[in-house]
Amino acid sequence: MPNPEDELIRRRQRERSRLLAILLGAFVVLMFAITIAKMGINR
Amino acid sequence: MTSIPITETQSLPADWRDLLALTKPRVMSLVVFTGLCGLLAAPVAVHPVLGFTAVLCIALGAGAAGALNQWYEADLDGKMKRTANRPLPAGRMSRQTALHFGVGLGAFSVILMDIAANHLAAAVLAVSILFYVLVYTVWLKRRTAQNIVIGGAAGAFPPLIGWAAATGDVTALPVLLFAIIFLWTPPHFWALSLFVRSDYANAGVPMLPVVAGVESTRRHILLYTVPMIAAAVAPWALGLTGWIYGAVSIALNAAFLVLAFAVLVNKATEPKSMRPEKRLFAFSILYLFGLFAALVADRWMI
Image 1: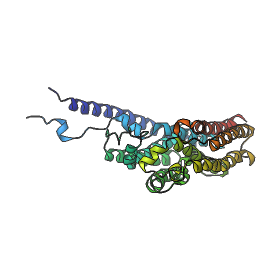
Image 2: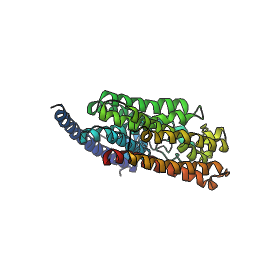
Image 3: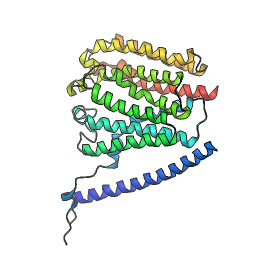
Image 4: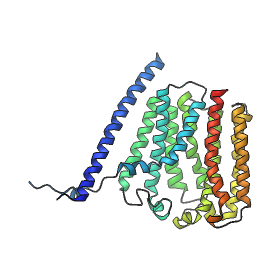
């Protein structure tokens, strides 16, 4: 029978991994947007 | 092969909601707003993506400072009703996690600001984080009743950072915006500390009402309100803003002065009877929002 605390740890790890993936994706998009904006300003 | 239960090999990881709580989101809202206003009040057009990133960095920097403040003050927070349920004193997170999160977030915010805006904005952001953590939290808070007078400078940086991110320099107007928040902080926090005095006393924090008494704090509130009003009216009086800011500023400052007088004449010593103090505290938040909103309206509508 699974330990309830193990379940909680797994759930928190899953939630944090998902959140980290979303934040990393957002960071990549933001860096791309910053690069485009800076290129536009310098032109 | 038998698998080892996770609980035997590692402790419970922090919930992401607790990491978010570590950044003090409610305090951050005022920081973000004043930073955004500093950016929008600047006399140059900022690219929306770069402007958004600059405000994001101000928010992340404020979050990092909040996290490091909670890391250092976990023992104090545990002694006060208002803060006892924060992630660290409540035992929902390890201190090391809070420290790593705070340092990482702070470094990230400064580097990103440098990439998106300029060196000056990044440097002022770094100074503001270090000032809040080292000067206010570590050095002043537990040592002197003047803690929030000097420490208030940390919360006054955002409009300066916003302006610096937009223009790459610092002129008279952003310095005045800094002075407004710097001088607004003592009356704002002393009004709060009057009706949560016992909390601070129990935790051993030398806030003015604990050290100098209620009457002295009430006098100090009025004493600091006068230079705050002078700083708040100065941008209009010096011709740096138009009539919208001037009118709103005069109205808000008159109301602030009336409420500060109401606090001065109140003789209550029990928090239940401290309605003028609670009113001044609530109004002081509205005051700052109103003043900075008027600044932006003035810049864009005239």
